[in-house]
Length: 411
Image 1 (tube, one colour):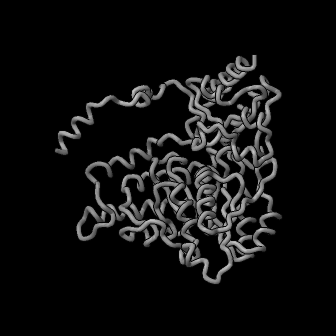
Image 2: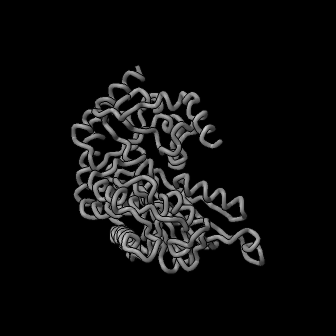
Image 3: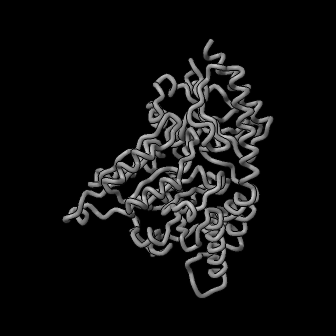
């Protein structure tokens, strides 16, 4: 019987990994890892809660009031997302996050291998050497399917080499993908220049903007971006929701990569999560209002943090450009310190050694390798991400704790 089988399984021993998990976040800890995720803004939660309760509904149903209320809520959220990035609402496709959006943007532009091979040149994808794994792994998968996927180098600051981009584009490409802001070293790329080069050679331009949206100004039409991916949990919205901006021209060429009920203009099927869409919309609304002031505040805190670290550890090295950088990002290498050991020893101060998606991996960061960092520098690199609720006291406490632990590890 199904019931008895479930009962017997539920009585089995819980895995040690689950049993050992902390029951709650430390109340007095310092969270300095906002590139991994951001806390849900209380105002976003307040906007979402009704749609988990009395206002629940399926936005794709028709013929009754609850369904229409749900559809209106989703379309309002779509408009709020569009407003933040200078798009039209019809250009916004809701997804489960930036990873899905990047997959749709890139995989959706390439024909199946059998069709693409018939008398056509080998299709080409260009992507930067410091892309997030969702773009890198998609490129590798496409390469296995007959697409030529070429990496574009960056300089020591993490900035794309425009001359190399132009040379590669001269050989033809369907799409070029360069992230707006790097998730490890915070480098901001010259998106307008990249988009212009792509269009000059008949190539679409995609940017993974998960780390940039809501942190720095982005206008897809003014910049010439064809496809842009974003994620709710990187801008104080809920996890499990994101969006793909897709211009009208790009949308005509895009194919779905999963199939179902034809929602989201046939490009992303599946029932939309009503409350999550509302949360993403509200997060974008708040970001549009507060982004400029928040950027100034975070830049000031970041500079104070760097000064405090440098005073105690003058040999540290900053990874990435300090001028063209996300306001709340700092990535530094501490000589003689194993970054993994430092992160583990910090306890109630949360930082990371690089991308959260790569944590636990023994290989050095591909981003720092692309910047030309030697293995020692890469292995001693820590990523600090300041955010909306980071205070000056958090910065002081976090910096002092990093200094204290680093000095113990070197001793």
